[in-house]
Image 1 (cartoon, rainbow over the protein chains, first blue to last red):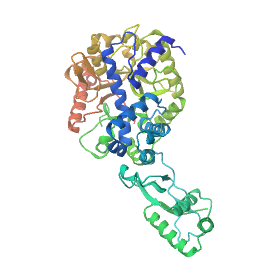
Image 2 (image 1 turned 60 degrees about the vertical axis):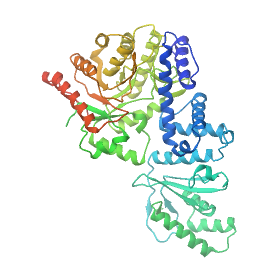
Image 3 (image 1 turned 90 degrees about the vertical axis):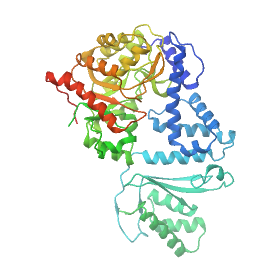
Image 4 (image 1 turned 45 degrees about the vertical axis):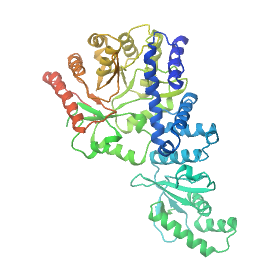
Length: 251
Length: 281
């Protein structure tokens, strides 16, 4: 490095001041003007977080939110050069710091994660559709789906209700989120545990639908194959109407 | 088509660029960080945009002034993005936005020191070698000097010359700095390597105290900045000029009015001498 230690120290000091606001001595600087840097830098971070997490920002007490954001920026070293991706680091930071317990916000991790996944899916790079055929015979085939999706599990139904209304509703909530190819909009749908298993197996594209049904019969202890098939076809047809199920794999 | 004055592409009024009739820039500028490695709705809009306008790019996160090593993965993505959209002008700021491996997402002033000149110039050279092109570096606005041992003009000039890069001359930043640090804007510009000016930025600013202006890009360009711009054009070869407007977005007609003002000055100063400006599509 061609930079002298003293020069580096000066840069490090102003950068650290922008992150935590603690008073620093910087050579030849005009101290009364330093707060403008702190304000400008902090506003970028604050705005990016409020844009990504509008529900969290709306419902969490403003003083608590301010404190969390302040802690994040002063303690965490943001790694991603793309500012729109930085909020994921915020989610991870909150999780690591157990802020759900500290601030008595049991839904916090779920809410941040749900809001982040929506942004991530909305912005993620395009993934080419698999080569598929339209077919009425799904049973002996592998089902092809829109690859721009995510199946997630939540403990609080933050995708359906206001955050504080979910506090006493801890459970297992499975969701499919996907990006519509034409519009780029994010859609989500609730899943039962059985359909989650079905979809996860369809997505892995290793088994035919018939093979997956056989696994379900065994794992879930179900005796009624016909009922399973009927309900599953109804579910998959609905996803086909919505553009998530595409058809069957060519090969 | 107008190929001289451009404006920053913003999501707030993206549709206007694509289907509207009020705003008629000759090119658009965007920050690679906000547009690379994305898909979906905004990727489609970007592809539409690229078919309609030449694009220039102005980076935010390369942080040429950082003490640490360059982020080569990031640069690789920038290179790919520039290639994908056939972007000829890639510019960055003479500042740092990352330190101790923490991104700050805004522009902090580099100490005006000899070792910093060498350090930053070396990093710019590395970037240019990797990208296989000369980049343009912008003189930034700053609100306090940090451990300065030389004046700003000397620092900027030495970095540009030593890195053998182009200069993005931000005329508004010169005005802002001359006000904030009490120097003569024209003398400052005369000290810069004006033969290396490849791109010009113009913008508005906000006076927040009797002795302090912040470079907000949130107001219309004021007359003294237009005057400085006009004076500057006599001293540089014809280059693309960009209007920056990031906040407090007015009616689009007002921004087009500013673009027209800039173009009228450029025409008066440059086209009368049969100079031509090209921004490749």
